[in-house]
Image 1 (tube, rainbow, N blue to C red):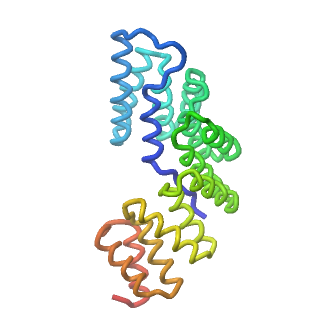
Image 2: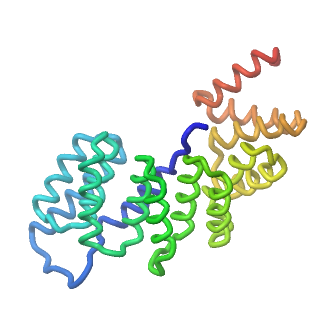
Length: 257
């Protein structure tokens, strides 16, 4: 199967929290510290916009101004990962965790990095460490990431277990609901897939992926009218999506309108 991907907004939301992470006594505010905070925030903003070179420049400046800023190390680590330099990424992740030991956001983000490097067992350990941290406000995020990583192995039963743990913590967590719907469909559990997809769509905005899954799932169940409703929404709401192109190809091959 194709590798599952982590939800970018989840990672970026967690990363925003790392910007101001500190450990131990708070250092006195200085002009350099203020400038480092500003540059780190700009670097994260540029990275979110896809302006990676500008992001790198701002984050390097932040670390020159404050070499012990855990959030800047965490952010530049993600940036190095996106730019295809895993050695520097790992160096900065480890430095961030030295500066802010036990930070569950950092542990979760490092787990995402490790899973992307096919270091599944290490990644799982960091996800579970984050999820078990009493300071972590969203353990369902780390548990869902553990499940996504297990799908990449692939280890479907283990993945389902993690998703169900995430939903036990937060029954409305849309990403875990989506993963359960997609995994259930992949394993041929169509009624279960339908139930989780409906719950997912009750808790999140429609996406091309969800609507495309709805089309295929309802077709497999023999519910042509419901499948067509999903298809109309996909073509109307996401006319340029990859999933819409796949739908149009399917319709053409089937000789349908």
